[in-house]
Length: 103
Length: 468
Image (cartoon, rainbow over the protein chains, first blue to last red):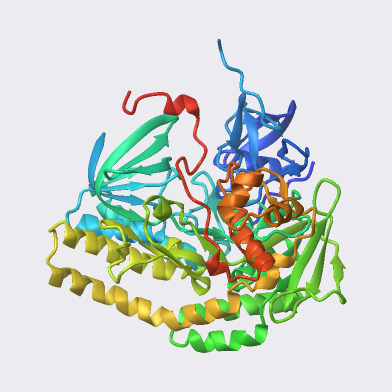
């Protein structure tokens, strides 16, 4: 697996794992979910509703909503604005995503 | 509902400058930002859990930011900082609403300073929705604050000094820049140096960037734009072409570059959603980034008690933004009776002097980097214009042929601008597309009507009473 983190000049804390579509990837404290995914070479974060096109991070500052993913069961969360936490579960969002609501 | 004398929206350079001056004068200030910590986009620092052993990566902006944040920290106890606050509406009676930790909140204010900054100008072209196409600002942010290299082989395309600084940032951090496509005329950069005369720090920055590009042997393609990104599921190559005076690409001399990442930076668009919600008058100023709120010299808009400062009012960069913020903060302090008119004017004088010194450079930069109309002709029939609702150029053209004359009619007919980004990504280009189709000036095209919520919010959060 590639690791696109800048190593020169930066010391990170301890790594931990997050789960993306059932696969384990590494993240460090302070990283967003988008960072952990891009560092692992995963660029497609969702597929669009109508045309099923792949989309990934675009604006990086929380305005474009292109990086929406299903995070711990909640859809439409921006991966570029959500911090990775140990053990969090992330899924590629298909279309609108699905929210499991207790009835 | 919370009561505050002054609410400042946005904790970047302008918002911090305003908070510092107003709080020093004794105003009860609330400072709101969507980020947990103050600093805005430009002064957002590397995550705290990272240790930086090579500060070169972070550059002069970092030092300037640290200084401003240190000044803010001297008065921080007197400011109510509300981080992680997503502001979604302004309502009659000087009320604003925001969501924090999934809970709804409201504030009643006497004075409001809007200092929400700007974002990279989105320019549609075939392939711009592919994963691997980022805004220049996004790439800069990922490297500087997250220590992430978002690709391996980069094409930087657009206009202005950000591309040069980004090329250096990527190279210093170990990435490869295959080429820089600058739409403007590089010859004009010598004028820019004239404009920067006296601002030695900025000239030194500029020369350092050029030297870095020369040393890394990065081809600087003059008067070139990106016309296409291609790839199976993500960027695998990009096509660049030379442009004419209007930045319309010439059909011959196209060149394909093997790159996996494209960073696009055609300057910035002021974020005017909140000044529009506040019903401030706006004017179209292409040199300042597009539609901007009209203000007097005290940064007050056409609405009494509503001020605006920094890049959300005109693209001039962080150095001007902080001065505008300070002036707005002082003006509010004066209007609330904490300072006499004379005291306020005296305190504003050095800010105005520093702004005047930056003015010539700003005018030069604006002149070179102002987007030309040819940019809005890059899309082909099936290019997505509205990323959220997946609306193509041909659907928009069909709406225009069917009688739609402005952005709001196209919105109603096609859903363009109704998605999650609320028109931020398609709006600036849509104006250009309509203007081209109808042979009008962009200033003749009315912008989208802005309504709350200006960002998506959960119904479950709205369904609760404020303060419950």
